[in-house]
Length: 165
Image 1 (spheres, rainbow, N blue to C red):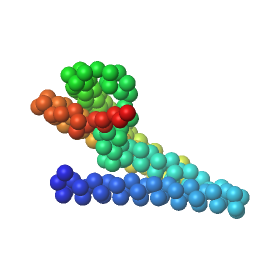
Image 2: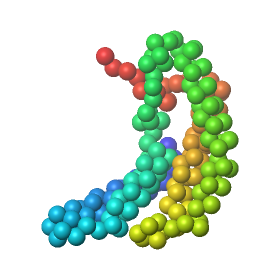
Image 3: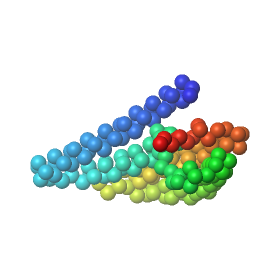
């Protein structure tokens, strides 16, 4: 991995860490406010929900490696190498096609939300949900790269975890 990609990866990790810290601090403020002062705060719940949304999509797009993604691979491990290549190619192509086809409608829906604001903090909802567009774009690019990698005869080992017994 080049120095630039390592630097970008580290910054993506920093953003995820910041989101997790903000969520945790808001959670602690809510606990103290609710159970010590008997005065629950609405904004802390909104911060927790928004940072959780961003953390999940940001982390899936920029922090997790291919091997870290959730997979249903029971059948995949039962078949031979050639069939695994076909499975990998079909799944990468399906992800690419599905996310690419849905991307314009997703952007349209996100930009539609510029007319609404969150209930407590008043954050425009297009800003809140814009992380999904980043996630979808990352999935499109990663899937396209995966398809190209496999069509060029690249190994599956770069993208699969070897099961241990």
